[in-house]
Amino acid sequence: MMHPYIINTINATVLVVAGLAGYFLLPSRPVIALLAPAFGVLLLACTYHLRRHNRFVFHTVTALTLLAGFALILRINPDTFEWDSKHILVLVMGASCFLAVLAYVASFLRERRLGNNTIYKEDL
Image (cartoon, rainbow, N blue to C red; front, top):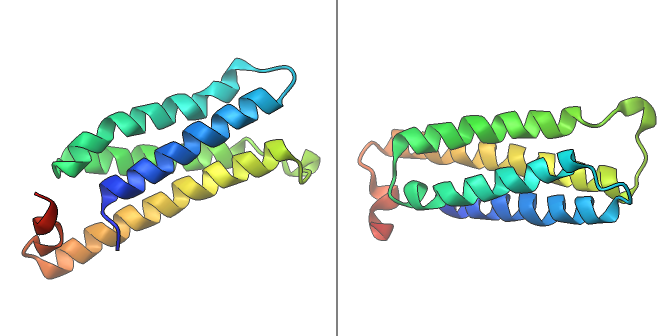
């Protein structure tokens, strides 16, 4: 199992790359398309604190990533959905957020079950 800071870095990179690709693929270039890359940059800024095992940041990043996943998925209108690049990029970003939250919760549960913090001993 990967550590939460590695998962956070991967998720933030997906948000930045896919968000910028979606922004530059759209001819109108709406400013709202830059929200996902901005959120990805904020998540990258939290990586240092996740590496230092700051619990408050860990729980905040988990909640915000879940919120971002729902916000991204809710941007898709089922009536006008097509398998084009815009919708695929939004689906990829939403799936990345949900998978990151799943991995965060799994690592938290694994640490709780062990109870002695041995999961994170090697990177301190």
